[in-house]
Length: 102
Image (cartoon, rainbow, N blue to C red; front, side):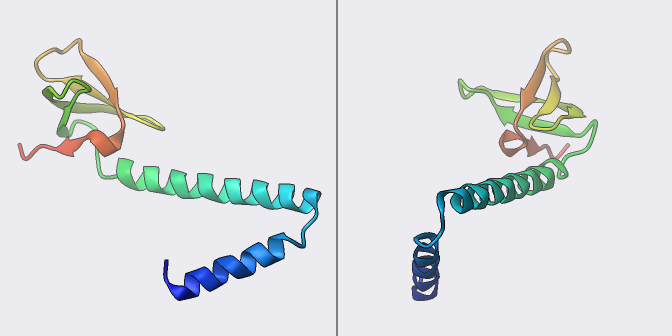
């Protein structure tokens, strides 16, 4: 953290010392809301990199290489049908998927 950010954090801490419990609770709710919005925006950006039917690959939890194509883009995951097993539907976070150069 650079000097400017350290000074800003110190100023915020000084202001926090002056707030009441109720004011701190309101501030906490506003901060949590802002973090959720930022997370949603990041998730949306990650999800928008993929489109329906697009070929993708990933490594499962055991490290096995798998490939398939995008079936559905959900709120928190992307549903993928595995190429080698048409009945194998996986729900995978977009951060673990990669586009195939097919």
